[in-house]
Image 1: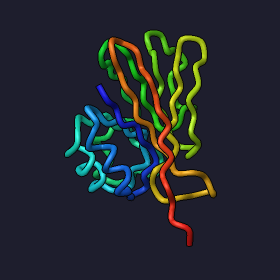
Image 2: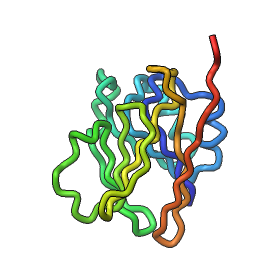
Image 3: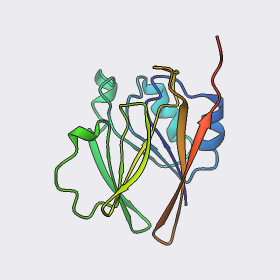
Image 4: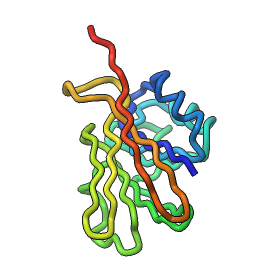
Length: 153
């Protein structure tokens, strides 16, 4: 199973991101979507697991959960936009997917894999534009960092 993991799109789905979404069996979005059209567009590619970010406001965002736990192929993912808002007890969680900082993170602490795909929306804070593609096979997750080109202006 291929999983596209993205966050902080802030109203922009880049063409390069769409190419990766075409190969995904599931899509995780760590929040700061900013527009309901982005949610609808993401749903066209694969089952969508999404959480609300601090910039997702208004009636359209009310139905998006603050946090979400989902199990795929025996691996339990906890999702939240800001990792500071996670529950203290992560018993049973294998992977945490979060966003907010726009900084790519892939690190294992104890038995939990922490994943922040960075931001693949508008370039901010002079940071690189990133997302993740993950391969989930027989309960094992292999994650690949995807660095996307940005326009120089």
